[in-house]
Image (cartoon, rainbow, N blue to C red; front, side):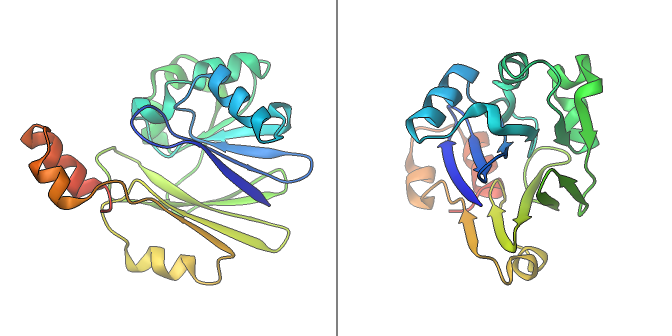
Length: 191
């Protein structure tokens, strides 16, 4: 199992996970054009990808979803919690694409076993994922305000851990951000 961040940050989030024949896209915050270009630069074929998993419905995680679906033939499944699907305008309009995944649920997507893990974030139904395939375990701990005991326990035995920490506390407080944004970022993202 291989993985590669194609984008991370407020401009758009997208992570590719794949093996020799198929893959998963975690979040679709970048345009299809950007994602496919970045994949090709790394020798990844966009045609390998059989599903999109959404962590939550913020724009920097879903704004490229419509283009991705359109360019992948219009019927690729989108796994998301019910709350995320209800908050994602595109999925509300195309509900047949939605494949529900519950909190702490494991689903099989091709050769991948995907487990959703709740996170501390300012979006209802936000999750992160653990992906397992061929005896390998990839734990994604992102979009969370803190690491919980549950996350720590689930990360045990991981072959790889992707941990997102996206701000430095002093820079956040003394930067040019308004107070509401400082509070939101500090509460819902690791430093």
